[in-house]
Amino acid sequence: MAASKIAIVDYQAGNVRSVQKAIEAGGGRAEITGDPDSIDRADALVFPGQGACDSSMRQLISRNLVEPIKRFIASGRPFLGVCLGLQLLLEDSEEGSEPGLGVLSGRVRRLPAGMRVPHMGWNEVRLQIEHPVLAGIPDGSYFYFVHSYYADPEDKSVVLGTTSYGLDFCSAAAWDNVLAVQFHPEKSGDLGLRIYRQFVELVDRS
Image 1 (cartoon, rainbow, N blue to C red):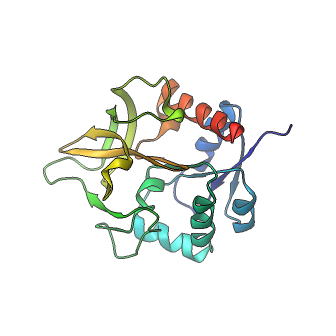
Image 2 (tube, helix red, strand yellow):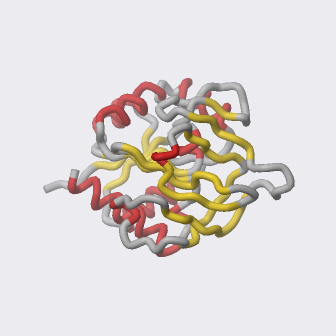
């Protein structure tokens, strides 16, 4: 049986190649694409990104990717958001004026005054609930972050993990078929690669 096809959304917002390599290291078949039809046909979708909310949303709009991403999430197929790929799922951001995708109620907020931004480097993720993609990841494990804003979902039951940097913020969220993290698993050594491997395994079981 052919390996499941995992699409990685390309909207000029970060190094998608490192995400592709991490998925392939986990045994997955990954395609970097900005084509709406390819997203529609994929077995799973990874939505990575670095940069600003406004410019990234404009890229998604100009490439006709907003509705395909929202449609994919609604389909129930496995979805993984990374860094900006978590923030853009919310309704809006203090970083700019463009609305987000709005698939999760809440707002993206700036890290508190007095903290050095961007928050860059290794930090601890405290797990709140279990998830198959994070199975076997010890509570309090360290992952690599680069960001100045954080997701603040209204529904706190979706918060999978939290991290402390001037405040406790949501560093991982999960609901239904969606998993999204603020950190970069592809830059987080063996534990980060384990997350991608277990995401591939989840996709293959779906």
